[in-house]
Length: 168
Image (cartoon, rainbow, N blue to C red; front, side):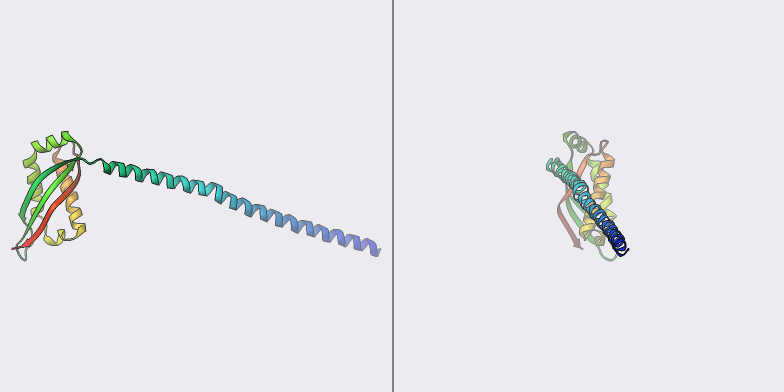
């Protein structure tokens, strides 16, 4: 009888050991599967997104390499809208246009373009255009106004070759 109890206890103990080993193996398989998924699937997706981002950057660089036609508008001298003291702005502007057709159209409409820019500059205060952000905003406004005049639009960029604010 004592021997039978020993055998039963050994069988129960080996059953518990088998159960514990089975659980440990399942946990290891689960962890291994998770690690494999991370390295194989998620890293592949990450590599694909980085590849797409690199391709987009390359396309942007190629687009900026294609320099448009430069169209010099000349120099503008205007009174600024400051009320405390008289201030003047002297600015020389060059437009970068998409192609020769747009340049021909801009040449035809040069008085309209110059008038639109002069009118815009007269509304500005020196405090608005003294900062880099203000200058960038002014460039955007000039591009919008000129694109509104040209039937096909076509202004790629606005460049200031001279920019002076003077107190009178």
